[in-house]
Length: 409
Image (cartoon, rainbow, N blue to C red):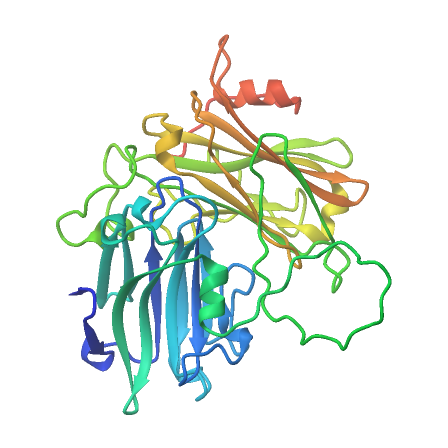
């Protein structure tokens, strides 16, 4: 694997890359919320077609030549350069802080091109910028090339969008007093909206997908930093050996995503890797856990999928995570859960506020007269009185299950 430094360039063919490959990005935020994106721009460096900004609100380009899997501060972009229209001359990969903080706060991050090349960077490379241009893939003399940029950028995602000539959807304003109707303004292009539930008890209600009879395929994603002390230095064999592959360290943190549920008829249950209770998407309980990431290194983390077209059969869901292996240091896990409902802005819940114990009740998803309501809980729960973590959480939130010791091994 070739290691790039800032400013270095190379032909993709010299790296053994041709057409279809993945770009994996990891920017450990140490508590920062970071939005990763790919801008497909023309020969003038402009976003002449806003459909080629691929980010949390638009996960694929029209023909699917760029597809994104996002999970917290990690992203994997699946590319097929041969399928891109000729008007797309360059793909620029960026990261932008959402909220407080600067790029100084980054841990050891990286951009990886397949298994062929890696560009490493960290917060020490920046000043007080709010965003970064990581790298670019560009056409030159009929060939695709890669350039390692690593350039800090003043302003966040909105400023990046403006830099590339895109137009952001304006925030709604109070209705003005009656006045002569002006000529209509050009239609806004890109929505950067995202909902972050900041405090315990914060709520948001989400709308049904107008194109279907329900809410569609709902994704609940968990992402975390597996090292118990936060971001770690690069390991021998390359930074990506620690971030995207290889065996986890013995002291790494293994977080498990799961949920308790209560169906509309009152039936309770649970979905989690522990005890092989994976659930089902197409039949009751209409909730499915896709896999168990024991290292925190998968680009798409761990995911629960909820069949929102059968949401009328679900009363409530309690989304939780627990530390299956490792020291219960929640602050160091840098955990974040993102809830994606088709047709709605993503909802982000960070595992903040600190806490002790091996269990965290993260959020509730409730059916409120046909509306989907998400509430931030971030409630850290410890085993007590002879009860396990799971049983203590169940007792607190009243699902009424019977618990027995389980294992994933």
